[in-house]
Amino acid sequence: MTSTDAPAHRPGPERRPPRGPGVRLRAGLSWIRDTDVWARLRALLSWIRGTDAWTLIVATTNAGVTYRVTGLAGEAAFFALLSLPPFMLGLIGVLGQLTWVFGPETVKNVSVWIDQQAHLLFTDSAVDTVVTPLLQDVLKPENQVSLISLGFLLALWSGSRALFVYVDLISVSYGLGEERGIIRTRLMSFGFYLAGLLIGLVVMPVLVLGPGALRGALPADYTVLVDILYWPVVIIGSVIFLTLLYHVSVPVRTRWWRELPGALLALVIWIVCAAVLRAVLAAWFSPVSIYGSLAAPIAVLLWLYITALAVLIGATLNAEVDRLWPVEGAGRAGRAA
Image (cartoon, rainbow, N blue to C red):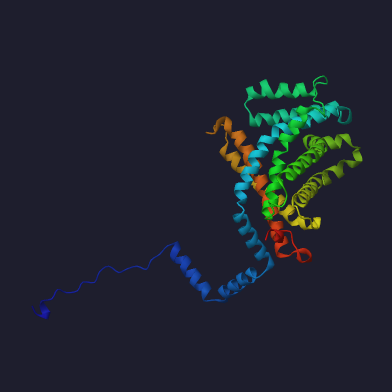
């Protein structure tokens, strides 16, 4: 066969250059690399990694993973859910004893609010046959639980279990879980619970009645003041409560203002997560939800979970601030070493 007998080469179809969003993206990234934008971006990232804020974020994240913050938040949420009934019964019992202070109408409104919230946790039949009669019996003058009775003290002890978990877990986030014994921690959580009960006596009626009731109770000149200060006071009070919780829960003391970063972070995380959770639950738990009667308890447990998660992340942040920038050369977190 000669060269003239070889089959002629037939050109194939012309190959088109690849197209699509991936090609355009790679082309855009290639253009960025060829300009000063890429160099400036890398310089910005290097500067961020060298800042104290980045060091704190990385340290807080690593500590959260080390101490299993997400798992500990689930434990705290579970015990908080178990402690809700004793807390509410204790609160109603104390309110019943102090009817002469708050007035019968306020006590009735709080009782109605608790009864309404109980419908979120239990079925209607369970509320009608157990919860409502129990609240009515507690509020009757002849059946009110004495403040010094054994049953009331047992209810307080059972309700303080949730705070015991919080106090213990905050100490663990500092690496000081073994610094304070279990008996001291239990007694301290019981004291916190009593303080929370007393605070709840003042805060609960205000939150239940809302700013509208305050406008009606105060002179007309204070209406604008209530509208302006109601939520700022609630937010500031929440920050103060979290700051005190962090400050007292850790066995080793420092200045109280060092707990403010964690308290502010916890409040911001809780507000954001609560807003997201509300939107998610609205989409999940529709009237034809597959969860049925379990939808409300799941929602309450998730709300308690994000509350515990926010508190523990704030405690972890405070612990890392104390470790990275100790006061007078001896931070609390250093005691764990």
